[in-house]
Structure formats: C-alpha cells, structure tokens
Length: 125
Image (cartoon, rainbow, N blue to C red; front, side, top):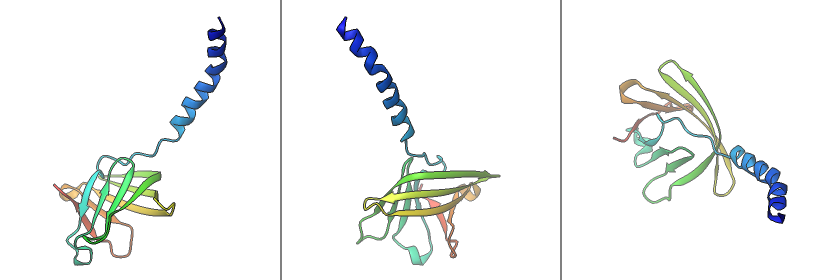
C-alpha cells in the first residue's frame, strides 16, 4: 500500500517533467533544406552548408574544422514554390547567430542566403 501512495505523490511531478521535456525540443528544419549545399562561386570554393533537422554545419575549407551550430529558434514562411527560414543558432562556445535562408524548388532546388552577395547554392546529389 505504501508503494501506491508514493506513486500517486510522484505522478504530478512526472507529468510536469514530461511536459517540460516536450517544451525543450529543438525546432526542425524543413525537409527541403536537409542535406549538403555547395556553390560554384569561386569565393566559396571548398566550403559547404549542411542542414539536418536540428543543426547547421558550415564547412569553412579543408584546413578548418567545420562549425556546428544547434538551431535554437526557427521561423518558416512558405511563399509560393519557396520557403524563407529565419534561423537562430548557437555554437559550442554559446555564441549565437541569425541566418536567413531562401529556398526555391526551381532547377532541382536552390538556396540563397540573405546577404548582399546573394550566392546561389545547390544541393549535393
């Protein structure tokens, strides 16, 4: 009988813990963005962007370790055949960064970052 009393006392705590764990899920990147992206622009030769459900990895060249960031906030706007994602991410040091990515399904999928250069990125096949 004591076992049941203890179980009933812990039940509210277990429910609260389950709800809190559900609240801390990281946002999920749209499936269209998942994968590795490269550009033919000479300024970015040897570099890549890689998206998976919860992380962004930036390859900065052969001699530099890739930078991995956890996605902490994601805003997705579907606009016709495309998607605009505003992504907040945090690296291992705790530094945060905001990245705006525009995806279009044209030509098998194209990606552009919101920066002055508007470089075109294509997904690796």
